[in-house]
Length: 555
Image (tube, rainbow, N blue to C red; front, top):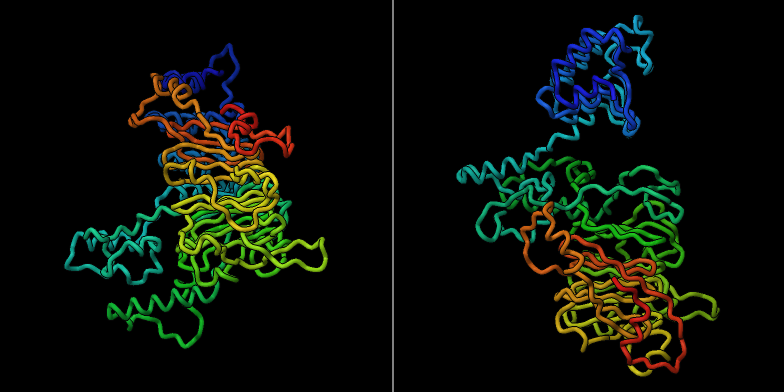
């Protein structure tokens, strides 16, 4: 480490200035353009430093050393010192860098090692993501919503209150509408908080696109995240416009509506902000759920087999709205994707399925063709009735060969039976396929189900009591996680401050491949591996729950 770096780290301004003013005659002249292992120069560190003396260090470097390279970009992100100064909020350093840029004599400096030979070019240098210094600076500024400002002002001065519903297209509070009274206030009498919607408004995908499930319009891989764009169907935009007209008329503001003779919708309607509720990915397709009141499911991916629900078997390189079949006019709140089929739950508790029905994983029978090799497929969403007529579906999960659904009163499974369906009666092993949903494990669960997860070899259930049960190999078992033993180190550590003194428990489960994963309330992650059955003899007992224990590794 050179003396300059040492003095900066020690915050020794006087020694730093003295060294640059009168270099050691016995030693080499300090190299202010030397880089660390991330390609950052001393000026990079100074520009982003929170120290009160950072401005003094920066001015000393810029004034005392004419050959300092202000255009140097680090190797990690491609940021210059100006990028770092603006991002860190060091405005005086950023101003000094831009002044130095305008005063630089490139003929005397030999056009600079960085290749920037034009005065004022510092603000034009882009990082590895294509952002200039002021693009980075702009990303640090909190966006302002005029509707939010007006609503706060109205709450402060009730006599001058404006109707909150006017021009709702300019606000991002669509998801709060169901909690509002007619006047735009909340049920408890408090004013509506326009900015209280924490739904996501951007989605990015990246990685291998070999299976066409990135939804970016082509089949190329992506090394860096790329933003997804969705297009609402025309009838939904027309619905937004009619609702907008009705609101304006309700408040007597119909004269403000643009009476343009053209049929084109207003820009505010066509570009109404879209909020995203969830993203679910499978091997061959991807689903996105938005907060729109209908037509809010979008899918992309490999089409053959009908897994997309578009009514055909065409592959979709970009996301398309799924509102065919039974989903027309309905709002989806949850989806589950198997490898070749899909499940969707609506806001009214109905469940729909589509895709391949090779193993009966759609929950109903499909007619077979004369060709025995043809796979029965459902190309549009179709509702699963049977035992669900009077029940509200709360959640679902899917593997490549079976599906799991739970309501407020029970658990149901259907599909190929390899011991993971939870059918532990005496003839369960002889049942290869369960085509219609079958209620299972009713006597095992003493409280409602919170979540389910499915892989080919097992079905995992998380109860609201935080117990985790697993069905596998024609048996079942409750998994005992070492919650207290594992969390004692974190809980008793002098480095940890815990304000929640409740008992540690499992709060979430997920699964993939042959692994079941659980998350605890203390932030720990546990994994359980499900092994392949060693003995598949039909003569073995099917009602002994101990049979599963040899297939699960300790958490």
